[in-house]
Length: 275
Ligand SMILES: [Fe+2]
Image 1 (tube, rainbow, N blue to C red):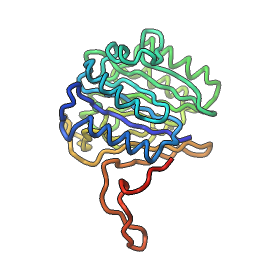
Image 2 (cartoon, helix red, strand yellow; image 1 turned 90 degrees about the vertical axis):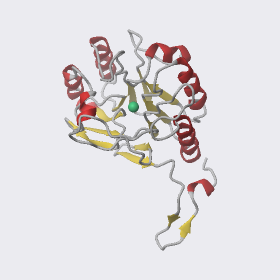
Image 3 (cartoon, rainbow, N blue to C red; image 1 turned 180 degrees about the vertical axis):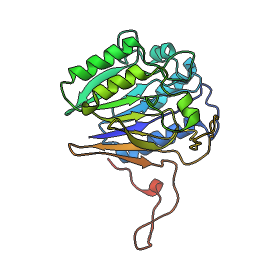
Image 4 (cartoon, rainbow, N blue to C red; image 1 turned 30 degrees about the vertical axis):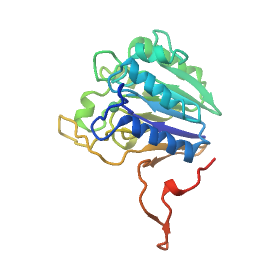
């Protein structure tokens, strides 16, 4: 199984620039790159902050972009999103009791679990009792199938002060639930940090990626974020019975390349599109 993981698009309603670049242009470039190189993917998941201000025009713009992806695509909410406005533009998206944008489904032997950690009025993540009940049932119903979890907020501290301050708040119950089900959770994917990071928590491997538009630097102790125009990427995830391998594709890179003996190779953009 091949999964594409994108995050933190931060699209603006009027198409304006934001920090490092133009979110619309970067999202368009990313989509073209994904379709060209990974049109055979089984799934694409965008883990939240679809828009920057959560306004209707931004979701209309987002919808026009995301519909260009050629593979099945799932959308999660981040702290910059607005659940009500999102669902007006995407009324067909699955929700759990309470109207949360959550879903669970199978691809092959694996269960894909999409979680909604958005809480109106705060940039921090929350996961209330209603959502906890849904997740517990989703994991129990899997009857031992391996689960791949996707969410916006990191459920545990990641050692970056500014991000941990707006990570999962009141997360003890969520972490206890995840720990109980850790044998059946193969990997957790999240966004929010705008950083490439990976590791494991209570035996559960996890990974995150940069924002498509404005990556951060890992300021470990500083209370404020540090946005830097480093090359954004998306993740290409290969899942087999034996492994979960996460690659990073720098979709804006279009410079020179060389093979192992020093021969110049064409830039990506000069290569014919794959299937
Ligand atoms: Fe973000």
